[in-house]
Length: 471
Image 1 (tube, rainbow, N blue to C red):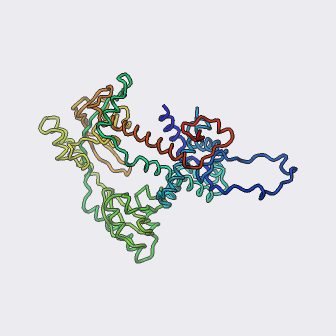
Image 2 (cartoon, one colour; image 1 turned 120 degrees about the vertical axis):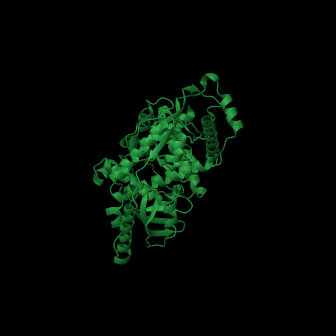
Image 3 (cartoon, rainbow, N blue to C red; image 1 turned 135 degrees about the vertical axis):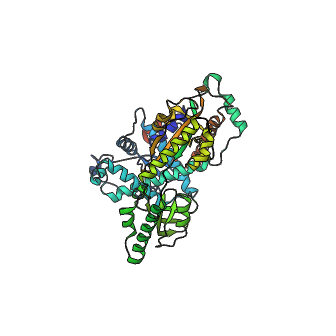
């Protein structure tokens, strides 16, 4: 339960504003000037230091500020005490302090992009009013708000990377998984819900070569207008680009050679560009692009791009649906198996080679927990019997692209108590989590002893889960 409560509190306070300050040397008594008592007689305490961790301080005001921020973000703090909030802040500062000591690397450009995105999300709650937003968060101006958000995200990222560094090399052997499982009393072994294995065949409308060429020619015109006529590339992105992520990122993506992001073709093209250069049109699975390289900083490239999707004709949509209906009929009549039909006819390359079998992205196996399926996926399969082939249904992705699909439940495992043989991968994950928690606890215990930590005032009476008081 201690571990669960730790993780619960951690989820509550992610991205919450907290104070930080470099600790100055103690002021000597003889350097302090006497103050007229008449000036201090009616003075009120503005704020105080609740705790110190390494080079960071935590103020008394941080606890009520945290509560305000969490509530403003729609979170719940029912049953959460100031002692628990302070305990989480102490952990965060300990991670951040040692991340700096260990020279953990972060990208300031990525953090500023994150701040831009967060502020855009916040503005949705105030109908786009920055003035109202600043009033809610009690900030004088947008610049100071952004800087504080930057520091919060920076420290959170440092703390997160420090935690990841602690557990990055931890693994569990099959023998450790066996020992972990055998330690669980028979009557306390976890219950796993109903699981399904699902396969699908997808038919996507074909884009004509003529339509592809239209898009390529349009991108070539954009490039010529920028390179030859001095037009603004950003204007092309704002007016014509079809990548919604561009606006959220303030029209700049930061790519790092050592940290793969974006499609392979996108990265390869971007890293061939010089500052101020615009690429030729090229294709990825998402559509057709041109890229503009704005800035190069060592391994990092700040780029923007125009993405265009070729239009699909109504005739192509009808053809795709008709094609899949014929495939379904061949499967139902027994002329071909579902798996063979998927290998032969499916337009989804990720599942085609496995006979259409879907891989659970969370567990990386073929099993899907029925209780954890998304509502759309659940609706598609809830009434299907084992080995029954669904009717053809239509799907539309966030880009508006239409495709057609048939699905089949290839296996079903009813709700059951954990079995070592059947549920090895799930048990392995639980064993790994336990080992990681123990590693983090050990790291915390060691770092608490060799890090300057001081808890002040009433907070010394808190019952922390860790030895923050060094008793």
